[in-house]
Every structure is written in structure tokens, then in C-alpha cells.
Amino acid sequence: IKRFYQDNGVDMAESFDDLPDHLCVELEFAQLLAFRENEAAAGDDAQVLAGIRLAEKTFLDRFLFPLADRLADLAVAAMPVSPYTRMLEALRCHLSLHRRELGGTSHTTPMDGENQP
Image (tube, rainbow, N blue to C red; front, top):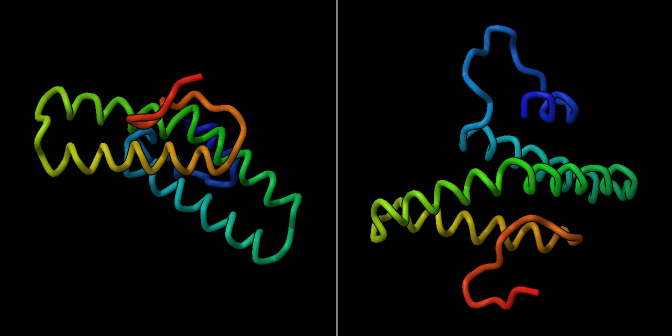
């Protein structure tokens, strides 16, 4: 994941000892990609926009959705009725929706009530 961040213009300090794969860091990176996507769309730069959307798809499929999905599953198993469980379930649904909006195939799971192909 550190290499993916670097490949997408985010460098980390050599002194950064924490693993860059926890939810806060991944959400910050997703926000950065969304910001860049908005700038490219506003600037009518189709080539840059396509590259950013590809990075978003890859990031969601490889890193953010699997992490959020695992955390939501753990929360549901540990305490089904909790504000934190509901928050993680909402995150999982939001990421699934965003991924579908980006188009193409993904490794995400369908939201409740959806038919699988």
C-alpha cells in the first residue's frame, strides 16, 4: 500500500513508522483522490480524470473496500447493535455505491437486497 501511495503522488516521511494501511490513512487518501478527481473534472482534463478514476477504482478494490468490509464484519459479529457497527456498515455501503459509480468490474460485495450475477 505504501508503494501505491507513492505511485499516486503521496510520499511518506522516512520517520513514519506506522503502517499506512489503517482506516484513517486510507480514508484520507480516498479524500485526496476525490479532491483530485473534482479538480480534473472542473478543468476538463479528460486524460487526467481517467487516470484518477482508475487510481480510485484500484485503491477501492485492493485496499479500502477490503479493509472496511473486514472491519464491518468484525463489528457485526462482536456487537450487532452499536453506533460504531452502524457507522462501519454505512461506510461499506457508501464505498460499494461509489465503486459502482466509477464503473467497470470490482471485487466488492453487493449491498443487501441486490442480486448477484
